[in-house]
Image (tube, rainbow, N blue to C red; front, side, top):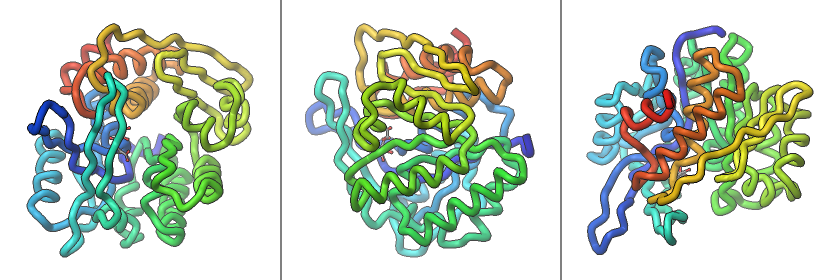
Length: 306
Ligand SMILES: O=C(O)C(=O)C[C@H](O)[C@H](O)CO
């Protein structure tokens, strides 16, 4: 591995969670940030950088402060004059979440506006992580800048991990999403898809079909499937790792992202894919028991260690 740090690229939003009467709780979350949060909690010795673009309003500043207070830097990410962060609210049906977004003009859409700064953020990273949401918030030119920066980091020795995380509403059409995600997978070492997303986007009939399709493109594939087993495809082998049944989940937001953070932390620490998936399932099971996408660091660590 080339470097020592961990970098995650994407959009962190303001998050409204809680949904108890008129009182919402505001936090900060976004898929790639949620993953970095868990990864950082579980690999504190590695410098963590959230690669994005930020506004210059008080909410953006609060976001940057929150990251800093928790040991996560923003490297050379641009601060855009006049821009603001995106916002999303979590609606719960039981514990199952759905999201309402206000993010069309968020600062993060400009995360590739300075290609030199973007590449600089990816220097000396053991791991570079991004997602289909990162791709979806960028226009075609910015997406090309992003993929070039990721490819450069990879050729310098960084491990690249990617979660396709398909959000239909963020894409112009399904074909655009398919093309961009396949292009990203070509620059990926560890793919962390979720079966229902892949079924929606590519029509896969089973998690096995997802694993078989993706193993043609990526050497290590972990197909998540909620409370069903995760399926790991590495080389010729295909293995199932059972998930954990949570009796009383509170909010499923961030479960898959936190699984990814746990899995990647374990892989960076030298655990094999099966042990990494076991730890990742425990981390995800802890996250669904709290409201919002982020669980406290101590909760994540206790789950990871089992
Ligand atoms: O949906 C998004 O774009 C988000 O990043 C919000 C949530 O935190 C994320 O989806 C949880 O996986």
